[in-house]
Image 1 (cartoon, rainbow, N blue to C red):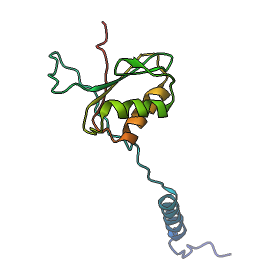
Image 2 (cartoon, rainbow, N blue to C red):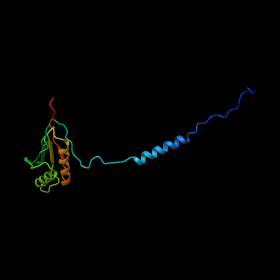
Image 3 (cartoon, rainbow, N blue to C red):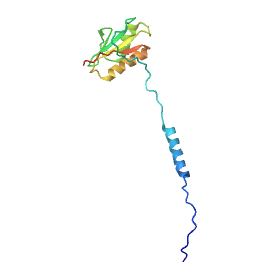
Image 4 (cartoon, rainbow, N blue to C red):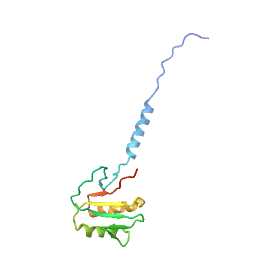
Length: 138
């Protein structure tokens, strides 16, 4: 028997399969990633301030009740369909697409009615949209 020291070659770890797997995962994630635009409608969010801002022109106003009933220019609409809202806004705006529009909704209004009002405004080309808020009570 030969109990002397053996000559062994140094062990090497082959990382080629690991690199292949990493590249395949990279390609998979690049191919399956989708990009989507979050919003097509630009809205100006209210900012808190102690002093009221002077208004230069009287804005159009949509008021939405807790039940989803629309009021345009202080007048209640006959139903809460988007087509009716668009027709009322078109009559009130009289073709002025740069006229400011304020959406004022009850705190318990379903979100769908607010989104529908914003969508109707966007379809008519009204671009100066703001959402009215009230100051929180302490």
